[in-house]
Image (cartoon, rainbow, N blue to C red):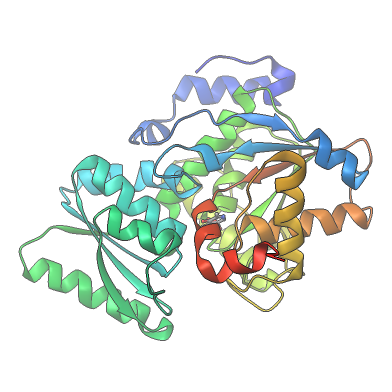
Length: 347
Ligand SMILES: *Cc1c(COP(=O)(O)O)cnc(C)c1O
């Protein structure tokens, strides 16, 4: 790890400590992602909104089968899977799950099998992420949303009975091990010398935000970390993130604990619920595309982008603030016909 100037990394002592320990846990990962991901200015969007200085970190460019935030988590999760001798990854998600796509892609790269337990109505013909599951060689099991946990357990046991060594990756890759991916991401941001006043991004199963919070403590980051909730009430997400961040700190033997009260979540942009693209998301996707060629997705970054736009318009940020919009990926869902058909006007 190179040693950035103290003002970039926050507190030089903290940074020294991180480097000295070389963080045994942080090293226990696979290299699946193209890191560091680039940081880019968004001058046209900033001007269009007449707001603060907006920049972005391109985790949609992590490189694994169209990228996204789950690749960082999988570097740690699959390291653990391989250390346990697993030959098959098992996880669950919605029909258009970016997490499932990146998991099956990682499995393909590493020569592992992958079974996905999916809920929702499968599109016919398959499109977006769902199409890619087939291309990347996943075994698919379909169920209804309330039955996912049971079906996952049943699938896991069936694989065992068939003589496989399955490894269960939790929903969204969000457990203390997965969260380490975003601890690492925050250390990466510090090394890039990037110290925004705000980080804004979509938050859902909480592993991304939990990792960011812990990584922020460790690197002495002084900005605010604001998760735009994609589907959960703020209170629920805040306590989940605090719990995950505290657990992740414990696995790393770091002395930090987190309370729900210090986790910033805005749940005003959930609209009609998970994966339901509304007028706000459509506006955000078009605005980012037309002004910056930055492609947001209909479920996650479209919703966080809509939140960012609204907060800027309301004067939530100071004009002199730098706001980092952390792009977490999701682009392939743009090509799901249920979204695609509503994103452009074919007059
Ligand atoms: C999964 C996902 C998120 C949410 O991350 P969590 O760690 O589940 O909170 C955000 N954006 C995209 C594109 C995702 O696929």
